Picture 1 (cartoon, rainbow, N blue to C red):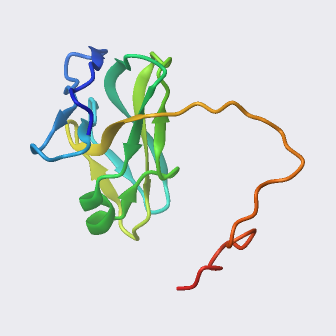
Picture 2 (cartoon, one colour):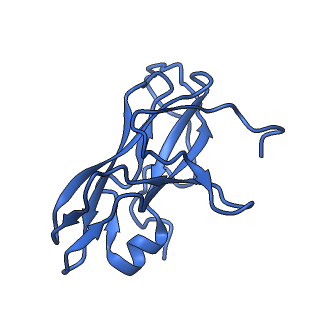
Length: 150
């Protein structure tokens, strides 16, 4: 945990937009709400883009905002993010839009103001990419996809 909260600047792009907020004191993610003029129904297998009516500015390139599905929507209704995790870079100033997909076999309707995703602010490390001829040896080596057992 950081010693202090970071500053997140948020601009409403629509008067009905709901500012991101933590649902509980211990919540890691802030709820993002659908900023819609009318309900949007997502058919089974369909992907949609739902606006939040918000733009954000992170304090610097040391942070990014990560968009995650809401666990209740995913487990109960089969509504999740098609890319699993959305990334909002520190230099992006456009509207935060949430991609949703319906993995269930029934239509699902998103109402204006519904909580549709959660946004977690995380520090990021930038790499100095260095090409090498070989990598150091580890016990695991190149074993992947189940190589360490069940």
